[in-house]
Amino acid sequence: MMPTGQATVRTAADARGLGYGEHLLVWSWRRIVTGRIHCPVMAQEFADACGSDAGEVFLTLCTFLKALAFASRRQLVIRAPDPFGVTSDERQVLTLLAAAQSEDHSLFQAHLRWLAPPERRRGLQIATQALANAFKANDLPLALPPSATPDSRARPHAVT
Image (cartoon, rainbow, N blue to C red):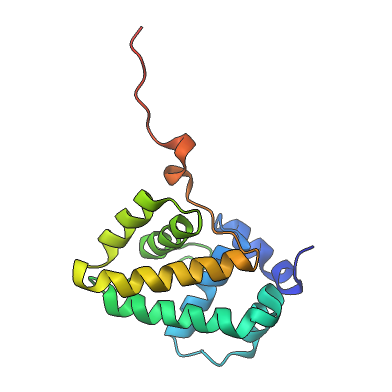
């Protein structure tokens, strides 16, 4: 059964090719960085998605965003011009979180290296794993993009 809030955002999430977990992350990230951290709608979305864990999951997201801002090599671009799109930086962060959640260590490390220099990676790694685990514990799976899934990776073909 889908939590109440998920039904209201399902169309927007599907239009971007995102599941509910990805949509909740991007939508919340955009609201937080624009100063709408005390938004009742966002609080309700987290309550619908995470139940009694809502506050802890939200604080874990805020901690992750602070770690990301501190560790990033550059300022990340969010908010695609198309409201149903995601920027390449948003997709990169979603892939980092999905790799952590799916325990794809090599993909996780590759995205972590791309985002942060060595001296700032550890804090981002811890925050990323905490957020990925919080979403997983609340049945909010984060999907790897098709180009990062094992079945779609380029494989050498035998010459016949």
